[in-house]
Image (cartoon, rainbow over all chains, first blue to last red; front, side):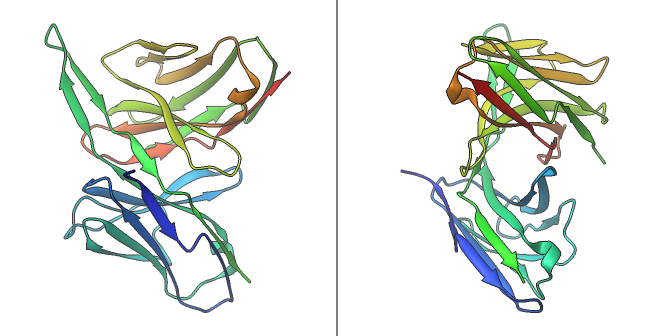
Length: 123
Length: 112
């Protein structure tokens, strides 16, 4: 099945360590995203990429960097981890779809397909 | 940037009753509004979405309504079932940005 996978699923590390979280997808989507989820704060966008040569900062990019090595792979790095980066990290992909319906109206959807998440703890 | 407010943060309903979750957005250029459901320990998954040229959309027991003038949209779940218990996130997307801004989530508990 086409899917979005993340490694590792759980990671405990210490302050100051460099950490890389990896995301792979077999959906063939060009667009990939990294989010972090904190209790009560929802999902916040860290970085996103619309193709291999495209990297864009999201709402909370400070302290993070990314690499889009191929269409199917998007990695998130924490250069020097700190405790307030303890969170659940999700990768996602999307493939916007516009349909022309009967009557000439258009239907738009941009479903984001999330990976299973990586739970990161920084001590 | 866009700001999405979601209410309530928690909601408990009896099985069979209806549940309504409301979101407001700040950017009048936003034109796409999806809702995601996240079950405990699972990944978020899209359950329904609406575009700004439509006022209401239904899919079986769930529906979304949009009021562009007031810049708010709502998720309605009828005949709730225990398996509807989850955290629900609303989101908005500014036209052409392809970036979603999420609300903070509503934890829905359906009591059997």
